[in-house]
Length: 435
Image 1 (cartoon, rainbow, N blue to C red):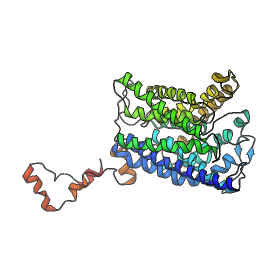
Image 2: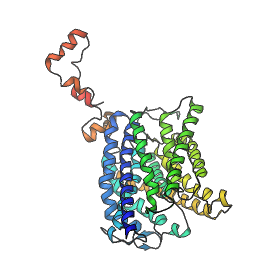
Image 3: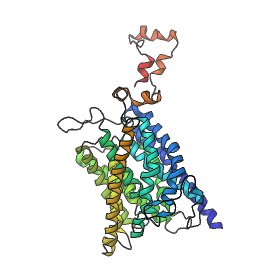
Image 4: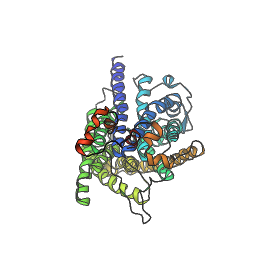
């Protein structure tokens, strides 16, 4: 009985850390997009944490972890998460809370890739569809013990495939169908760079995500007494650090500058890639996985631009391609079944199959969601709203109201114009709000 109490405390704390990662997503995306869209990306994260979380509780969890039907879908329906029996010493309510954090993370991956031009109502529909069908179905195949990929022996400890690859490739499909931001690509195929609005803000988001990732991975033990907690945590740290270091050094060599956005995404790529194998690989393998992910994220970013998909935050390269790589890496580096560690190819074959399945499912799911949005509320924001910025168009408030200090000054202060020759009278409150 004492163990169940200890496990409950551990998993609830881990769930809180995973849910705190949504704050990291919010800051990261707000820093990477242009100023006029920072509130909009933040509001989309609130959609994840509210509508997405509720939808997953009502329907998604039961379809993912409920009683199996044909290895494809759970059959526990609306409002029954607390009735699902677990095969370990942990209340089902704590497990539901922890899984809720994973579900909303999957939605947030898409948020960044479609930033600055998606209809806000369409994003709400996307969050609902992710949580009631796209994420639960593939999650059932891999994480439900009766799922067809689970029965084949696929390994994905904390979700490189279930969360990141599915979310990343759904984001790829949706961003492709949605189309690029105005002016992003030229007719000759060249790319115009839209500079991030606030790198320190994005960095703060990355730090929060990295912090939460220790719970994302180690919390997936669901067992406070598990002897592998330390190795899972250090593998997480080593992969993130080596991914970031590789991206930093590579950008210095390739572009002549240590690029902060690519360093951030290199760290996140390493964390994504180690998520599947954090409990199955050695520390040296974690470093190799991280180094590889640092290369992958840079060249995947260039590839995404090459196929003219506009991804403002690099979500497809970070989560999609490195979720794919992390899934395959288990088959290479697993200490008991890996090709490089034991010479056994059987696990690698299963991991490759699982990787292909989640790529196809993610792309199909993304295209399906885009189509539903197009047929209902419309997928893309109006051109006028994009030009003005989605902050004002959808939320009526700018992220940074710096010029307000001039518009609300007492009349006597306007002597500033007479003494300096600098005119501030034309500054209107409406103009300040459009920045």
